[in-house]
Amino acid sequence: MEFELRIVVEKVAISTQEVVERNTLKTYDIEAPQSILELGLRHAEQISLLSKVQNSILAEQCKLIRKDHKTCPNCGGKLGRNGTTKSKFHAVFSDHQLTIQKHRCQNPDCRWQQSSTTNAVFGSNIHPDLAKLQCEQGANFSYRQAQENLEKINTCHRSINNHTQISRLSAQVGEMLCQQNLMTPQSEECAEPVESIILQVDGGHIPIKEKQKRSFEALFAVAYRPENLQPIDNNHRTIVDKSCAISAREDNLETMKTYVLNTALKQGLNSNTIVTALADGAQNCWSVIQALQPHCKHIEAILDWFHIGKKFQPLLNSLAENERESLENAKWKLWHGQATEALEKLTILRNQIKDQKQKSKLKALQDYLQGNQKYLINYEQRQQSNQTFTSQVAESHIDSVINARHKRDGKMQWSREGAHNVLQIRAAMVSQEWQNNWHKAVLPALGVVA
Ligand SMILES: [Zn+2]
Image 1 (tube, rainbow, N blue to C red):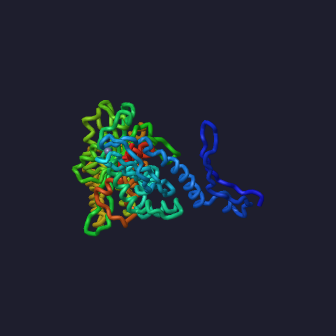
Image 2 (cartoon, rainbow, N blue to C red):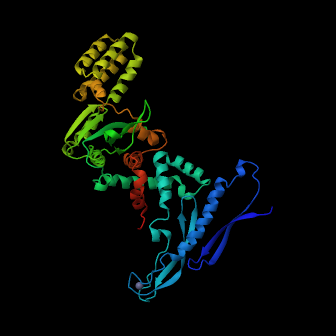
Image 3 (tube, protein in one colour):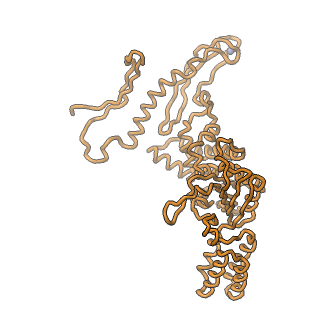
């Protein structure tokens, strides 16, 4: 071997370019790789090298922390040095120990002492980038799964990535978002005033493991401008810019109504806006929608064709050939805006059917349509004129938000408020607001000192 490779950190005087300190962090052999495994550095080694580089930077930064602290905040007396404190700092991939200068007041009557831990100086000992990662994992997976995922990314166990820490932080950040979502958005958070907004509201159930308790309902709303519903290909569409709200609180919809108004404002809602609202037909969804009335020009409330289809489908699948045809026929009437005829057809069909189970399912469908009759429109006509009538975009439904977290993992036992908080992180992620605004919730939740 003729050569080796040294990874060196140099501290250099900027004016003279003189190297005042030089440290070899690591020496690597230069050898022909026997396989692709030996190409470059392996996963754990990359993190280890980065950790050493971080140590060099942190050592220099530590020397400067509170360097200009000269006067006592208590009495105004002179401060003297009083040793150093060692404390922990958790970066994204590695844990470190900081050595921070401590001061003490020289005035014998005061003797004020400074606390010099990472927490005391910065408010937190976790780098916000790590906290962000923990929240994202905590919002998308069970906390134990999140811990496992972070261990894989990190190649080792770190106590800072423990599931209890992820759980605590996710709850704190969720709570912060939950409060922020109640506040009227600043004008810079809002789009230009628009003429038209589409609002979809639907509900879903969050299962809980405890047998004696029932699952609880959450409401989900997505607001977007019509032009932002764009085709990906012939069969799929996506909403490129949207604002989402979700609430699992049991408070007579108060939280949800406020959240929905704020998401609509972010999309450009004003007194001249026509809101086209699609809902799954549940009364609480209509109530949330109607609460927007004082803030817009007009609400066009429509029973979502997507949900109508979902109600018809299981029955269509279970009926015999000729009965299915009658049901198809009723659906066709509905599609063409002939709700009364459709309901009549359902009554006739109900009288024909012998099977009690199917009979009651049909009754449920009929009740559903009857209860929402004033929200039934001519769907065919709307499709012809290229107007909204269905929420057929997967990402715009509550299931896509809840499934990603609460349904997949049956092991967690959720309190209603706990689920509500963590779902706020999910909603921010689905809204594409998280990437730009995470620090607004994460920094205060961590207690970061500016
Ligand atoms: Zn003092």
